[in-house]
Amino acid sequence: MTRSCKTIVLLPGDGIGPEVTSAAVAVLSDCAAEFGHCWDFVELPFGGIAIDRCGSPLPAETLAACQSADAILLGAVGGPRWDSLPLDRRPEAGLLAIRRELGLWANLRPVVLRKPLRDVSPLRPDRAPRIDFEIVRELAGGIYFGEHALERTNGFEVARDVESYSTPEIERIARFAFDRAARRSGRLVSVDKANILASSSLWRQTVSRLASDYSGVSLSHLYVDNAAMQLILDPSQFDVLLTSNLFGDILSDEAAALVGSIGLMPSMSCGEGAPLFEPIHGSAPSLAGRDLANPIGAILGASLLLREAFSLPEEAAWIEAALDAVLDAGYRTPDLAGTASSIGDASFVDTASSVGATFSDGRGTSRGGAFRVGNAFTVGCSGFVAQLRTRLREPLPQLERYGWGV
Ligand code: IPM
Ligand code: MG
Image (cartoon, rainbow, N blue to C red; front, side, top):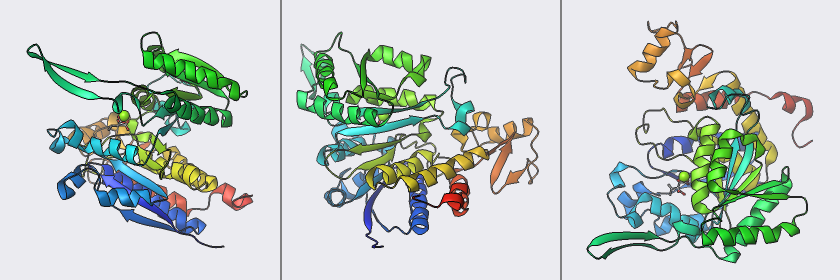
């Protein structure tokens, strides 16, 4: 077998970005060792740290490396340190720049309520029997890339942000979404505000016109306000949701809440250049450096990378099965641990004591650095990754019985 090495550019970024990115790298390295793959990791500054070091959130060297990569893994960017900069020089501007420069016009956000996390969803189990859908978000147009202006008129300030979509921009993202739906259960819902906005009206007409090319897909339309409500009322009705840039940004955070935590959701941005994978959460400065971050969004970003960029579905499934096994065993980062949400703080210790746990140091029991509350073990980012890597080293039942690729 020829081993061709794939180049994966790492952009850990700011806040918890480096912690969760190293979790994803650890899992990808285990995957390479287990399956005989070869990844070349190249780490470069991006976001706030790149502003500090190089004066720009997307330095030329970082962009050049991304342009010749096979895939990109991004952590998160931003933080209070850079909040006073003008909008076009902030870490977030680096994100828009990389999307623009690499022509990443499609963004895929899988929304899955994992079985062991059913009790973590804020919805009652009968309201969320099954949550498994994808948000396809247009990523290179709309209000994010329209004119942004601030003017002084008649003695006061007026700000303007322009939402604009052309037919080709709508067509390419709609075709992407139709294709995704065709590979799933064939239900596509397009989201717009066509009762008010001209750009949405063109969006609806264009998406509707394409429907005849996809006989296996049933298309329906929802106004964005109704879509926001339906996501809460009955998320299991959705399979693929197609949205503009802004609507997708908003609805994907709502969807993340449905599956338990924004820390759980990965995303893929793709189009012309190398595809970029990242958790959808932000840099969470208050958690940074405290080993409290949830690495699952980044780890699922790594499995999405294997499946979508490298066409390695077995490897992706291997990671996801181990992840579910760790969750099944009760390991939870603080954001998933309910009442134990402030591990590391006195309040966590109080919570643990109040449910009768006994810590070995006099405060309760601990297992491998994990604190036990009821049947759950609250672990930090590194503790969770250690559990996962232990699972990855164990032969999984299906591996023993059938072997891979059979
Ligand atoms: C996201 C983020 C970004 C966006 C921000 C940080 C620019 O919220 O990827 O969802 O709005 O696209
Ligand atoms: Mg967002």
